[in-house]
Image (cartoon, rainbow, N blue to C red; front, side, top):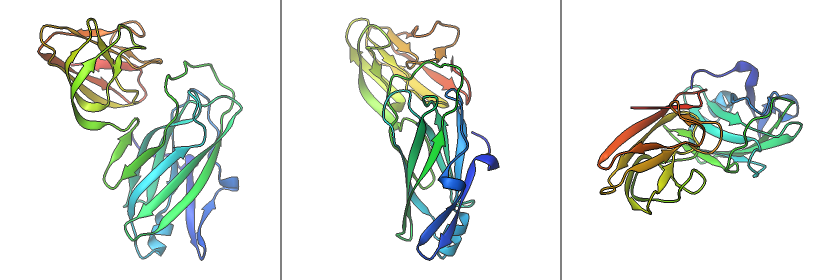
Amino acid sequence: MSGTSSARTIRVLPTASGALLCSLAQRWPAKDPGDVLDYSVDLSAWLADAAGDSFATITVTPEATTPGDLAILMLSANNNSGLITCWLGYGIEYDDYTMDITVLTVGGRTLDFSISLFIQSGPEIPLPANPPVPMSWSSGAVVVGPTLTEVVDNIQAAGNSQSTATVLTGVTNIITGGSSGGGVDLPAIITGTIRVLNRWPGNALLVYPPPGAQVIETLAPAAPMAIAANSGADFSLAMGSTTWRVS
């Protein structure tokens, strides 16, 4: 993730009643279904007016919850600049969406507002398997959806395909058993590194990309990579890429 677009940034100014969003109809610029773009809210003036208050937690909630609807893929905030940045993807063309944003500050203030975004016509893209979900940020974090646990142990591999494998939920994932021929799916993130450790005695582990357009190295879509017993690998995905690199 690098920088933010001023053209996709809405300023929030302080008022006696709370805050005023300085954008016509509180709306971000439109995007295509296949675009993954940063959309920001500038709360620097509002924070400064509140005696230099700062962000404690931020929650962004998509209005629609069907796979393919507009989804938040990454959330970050900066107390120095007062910027909240949402990386948004997907969306059904010609649909109008709303993102609800709730800000809680260290000083105990709450700001709750909504911003709309229209999906214009664009090329068809594969729909994700999972629906949009809310995403929350806490001070000092960068959240890359879905929210992941630092270490998850005692994972059981399952299924015999991408659609039936166990979905990983950690940054570091330790697999200790499972059903014969079982596998795991990498999480549906847009950037980051996921570590997979196979501690399943005597069994190779099949690691699948998440459902959608992503692939592992030069393998076909939905094709797994095998990790031998008592070994592991790091799977890395660069921003804007659909190819997981393995090291």
